Image (cartoon, rainbow, N blue to C red):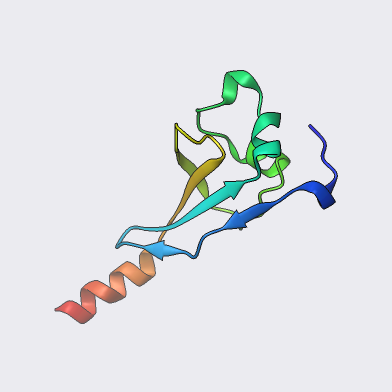
Length: 93
């Protein structure tokens, strides 16, 4: 899969979080979603696969869900740094 970067439109949501993960939603242009191999549509993509589509996220992000009615909407999450969790627990005590 190779793309001309001028025709690719990828939108990223703001990050949101809970106590364990940071989350982000990535919206692919429908042209890009058509380039996902048919056997992978509706399934989670590994990092090399979503990077090949042009998605740019820092290391550690995982594709954990797909919006099945709209396979061009991908959900990502990244584990919160455990040191931050420890600080929150200490502050709560």
